[in-house]
Amino acid sequence: MTSDHKTLSFYDTEAQKYAKWSEPSKPDARIQRMIARLPKAGHLLDFGCGAGWASKAFYDAGFIVTALDASKGLIDQLSQHSSITTRLASFDMLDDDRAFDGVWASFSLQHAPRGQMPNILRRVFNALKPNGVLYIGVQKGPETIRDSLGRLYAHYQIDEMTALLKTAGFQHIQITVGSGKNYDGTPTENLNIEAEKPA
Image (cartoon, rainbow, N blue to C red; front, side, top):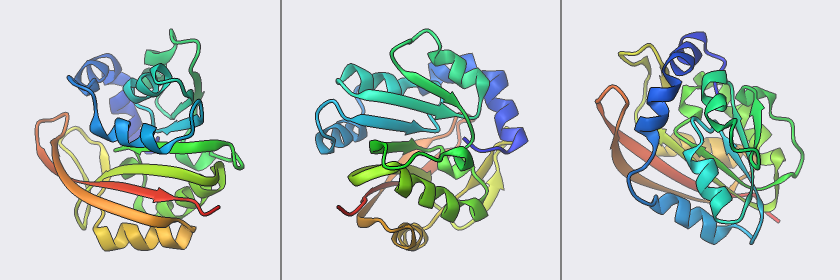
């Protein structure tokens, strides 16, 4: 997760309530798409794991899971799940080399300052094994804002994300647009992004 103080303060304070809100009410189709692209029993990094609902879904599907987040309150929501490795760290602390078959970053990277994204994507690229797969969810838009709860959001356009991923070395980039709703109730337009690291 981001190192932005206001954003971290929100998640640390609201961790338990946010955990209940973020848990999907039905199986997530994005998870199933990612599972289909990963090798059996592969190693997945949940990058900005939040309260860990995706980490648990991947673990239950038979994967080795490492969950990373900079919010101690959110990481603590996974503390009772001893089979999932947790890391209390910000995005710019990722320094693994060819360790993961997949990286899942579901609406987490948008909390990083826009200028940090090139460095973060390079770190993700290095952390993936050859042929590794990446999922990113971010909100669509041209601006950087703070929402009504004080959280930092860097919104992205399709061409901007495509260029950033290509510069980092990714290929086979696919982006679809969807809709959603923020914790504060505001509607969102979302980018669902898939990419691969070359062999």
